Length: 314
Length: 298
Image (cartoon, each protein chain N blue to C red):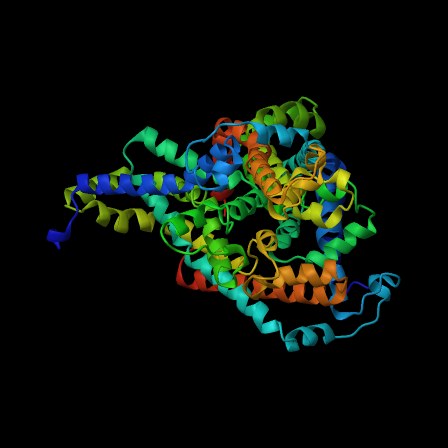
């Protein structure tokens, strides 16, 4: 059986060592058990279950018993008339969010320049606060503020002589409202990591630059920004990795029949076809398509980052 | 070049002005909600109230507190948050501690086993089918078990244990005959209160605020968490189906209904966010710390 006896022995001794290790430290392995069980059941079994994307899933047959249909669900999705609309909406919304990626960086740089300690502290505390509000409350506030009759925004518009706008039912407004309300919620919180990186900048660099006659703006551009560049790159990769995973729970809350033209994205479609209409296999196929694209994007961007800079996730 | 240079003073003034504008933009909606919750609905709806409360009245809060659905949502959310957070710690802490110890074989592999789930997952439908086949639909477990612990938290907690629990301490206790259980509960946990607080807070906020799992896994309204009730009141405008509408006995005019609806809207936002708003100033540094521990090791 063993072609290479030396290897077989080393395999055996490795196994023995492992057995001894487990016997000696079994309590530590017990510590790992709940987490391993949880990840197996709630993450790896669903990965196994994703095969229903290639099957016609019948609840009575179970996952393994249902018949294979190959790529039928995928081709049905690619050929459907809503395919391009979903792709377009998802990409535009993601790009829109991605374009605003520099905002927290700029805000962090601004906060970092504040000399007045208490003012800085208050600015941080107040701007972090919206981060802790639930999406339901955020969207509820949008509904209240943007109401065509009673909302404060439309009161301002009409008092300036404009006519009231039904923001939440207009496809052309959906993206702006979604993205900017998101900025409102996360701008302050997003600065924390950058501020920490900025606090690590060596003050001697600034002193030296001052002596050389560098202005504040110059020092920000040539000392502060390079100092936080590694942080920026890593966060940017993570952002791309979740590129198409937009805050879908918020989209779902903001969506209605009237704005669906722009608010219909891949994930809300998965929810609708899968859980509301019960087309499990079809929805699982679309979900798989979505995850594969995200994974591919993450790998590509990470690869580019690794080639062009020192910073990457792996 | 020199001509366009901003003096340091000028820079400071401009910067302070811009930061002030941003802070005001972020804070204004919060002040508006607070003021609106204690103003008369007609003043709010006609735009008379725009900053400070007008015609102060607490009827919004009264109506909210008379609403049974909100009370039951509140109770459910507290239960889900407490149970879910305890479960989170029970699974997370031992696992992260074990992974921080060099005795464990195959640490790399186990870590990747966890981290891979951040890169790829089965998706909504396969996960739903698992929860369903386990009979967790319409139970508390469908709320607290999915996402009970993430690979990221394990990474963060492990980094904390590696940095703050000295090897010698563990070795010495072992020589004294302490078991790993004893070391973990009697020595490691008391030294790890900061990380426990950070992890518990983050998870608790997440549980308090989440609505989606409840939306897909719960159909029994008496089990709805607060966020689902809020969704009905704030977004679907079904607030008056509860006890509040029938309380008058008479048929409300449409205008009156709109008024009551908008009255409780703002009060309900305050009531639901209250626990966080009260606790937030005191625990802010823990949250900041949590973000920072997480960013140390990329």
